[in-house]
Length: 247
Length: 308
Image 1 (cartoon, one colour):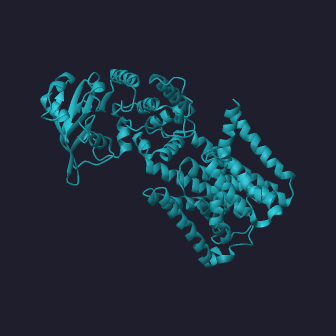
Image 2 (cartoon, helix red, strand yellow; image 1 turned 135 degrees about the horizontal axis):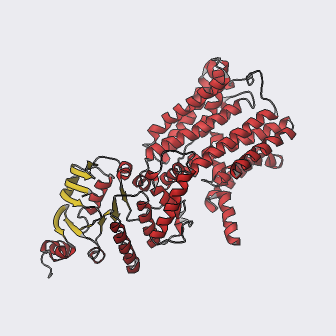
Image 3 (tube, chains in turn purple, orange; image 1 turned 45 degrees about the horizontal axis):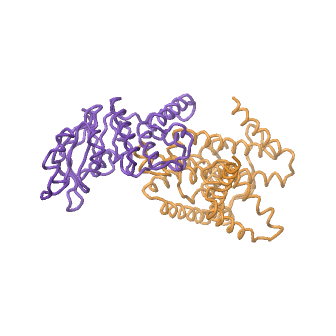
């Protein structure tokens, strides 16, 4: 078990966005966090990544509490993330973008570390190839397509050698072919022992991919289990289709 | 090795030409070199780190005034005065930068604009310490070990300062620190998610660039052997901004090209249109921002790509 979330709660004024949420993610596991719009998926994601503060609960990463740490401190511990709306560093090459992802892997030295710089650059170029952007290492990021930009997001996050990867709707806006490629990539990442927590509302993408699924509705967990079990769960069908709809 | 050799060669050539110049040409050349040094460090602050600050030229002034005050009023030996002036620049820069990390873009610009204005007020009202509106004059570079740098030798010292600034910033830009600065400029949220401490990166970049401006100011103090408040007003702070934008914001070469061009432009324009060269600057500036936001360096890139 690499991540343990317990009793996590977040209110925005009168609205409870996340209510007493519990779940765990194991090493090398792909956990899908799903739910209708407004279910609290993104809020949960932001609480784990340190973007916003929780009102109650606990988040433990590798046995240590991380709630209340700033985003850069959480990245330093080994949790890297991607953004749903790609956020590349626009003035830099593809490889330099990935090298920013390796920021926490550098020693603090600025001078006399040409060897380290070269080694990290080689690794970054390898990662660019691993995600399927071969030949684009020196390209300016603004020339990438949206789908390529998503692959870059993943390469950049991997450069930090995370133990947990947070993916925010990695298939959103992609063509079916691109989505299939991303799914293959995510399987490959998990096979290397990296835990993956992904938010998704495209069930067709998520269900064949996730090892386990947590379903949220109105900030609370309504189901948890294998994709097959969750798919058949009446509570889930209710949440997605409404109680009077023929299931 | 090859790189080191090219830096040495640059130092020899750039200092060498000073020995073939007359007194006036030497004076123009020294000021040109100082503008290049300032543009390089301002490019790191504005172009690479994305901090819109108007305090850079004030730190040039702080370096200049501080070294003169420390040597001639406190009686410190020159090397100690240089260190103390650099320390003063760093402390003041950190004092401006740390609260400013809570502010972004527009507000940092306002805070540093206020700082620049305050600096001029302090110079004017500083009584005997700053010499008031007339500034400080009638001093000379002290001797070190019985030897006083003068004429082309002092120009050579300025060449070393420029090359040192360039080498340091060039090296930093190609390190994890330079990439962190650019990342913070392009997307602070994404930079933080990659483990970059955004506030810390901004403060370090601001303090470092401002202290480098202070060093250039110390060299300037012994170019004219006088420092006065009129020099350190906002006009030159804006000129510095124009240099970096017209040359190509974020590019070291752009900063050098912008500084050389805008410093020398009035020498060419004045015989033609007198003091109206400011008008030409304004038009060029507007054209640069509207038509070519990547500056002259970006234009060169376009031409290269069109040919390829």
